[in-house]
Image (cartoon, rainbow, N blue to C red):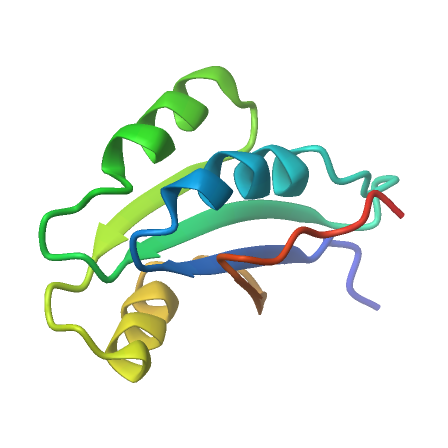
Length: 105
């Protein structure tokens, strides 16, 4: 029997939807786990200018949830997903689109 709590890496692939990113990070950061798992956030920015970096760094500085920022300069969703996976540390990986918002329940 495995007594360890599973860890989930929640991956967000971004491309210049900054107006949604702050809300998405806040919503993901507010998830209630009831101790059934831990989680961290990986933001993979598909903008070679790294436009999401300031939003992610601001969120990370105020959040207890571990957040990793990475960039994929070549515009390609498959490469961006692979970049997110390469930076994930979870037992499981979940993706949420940059224009979606998870429910609190």
